[in-house]
Amino acid sequence: MALFRHERRRYPRVNDILRISYQIGNDDLRYNCSSRDISEGGIRLNLYENIKTGTAIKLGIHLEDVAQPCWTIARIVWIKGTPGRDYPFEAGIEFSVLAPDFRASIHNHIQSITNKRSGFAE
Image (cartoon, rainbow, N blue to C red):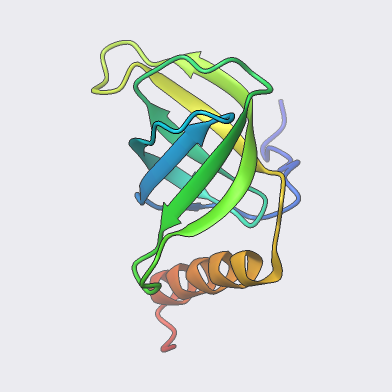
């Protein structure tokens, strides 16, 4: 039995509850949800609806240290039911479009969380 589980992720993730806005495909309706964790490559969301794997979404992440939400295009990589929780679904989201300002905002946010949890001053 292995003592350590190999992490296959390209980017380290941090647990973080963020306010999220999203639009499905070309739909004009905007929905809200929250995150469970985030990395520079994607985010895990708590959802109230079952969105088909592979679906493109426009994603707005409301970071504490940024005045406006950071918007990007992403896709649903996996989704599963979460019986007994306040939200019925949990989904893994991969960022598809990584504009430099979006990437920098996410990187800085994750670095800030990591520094706070490690006891380092920013």
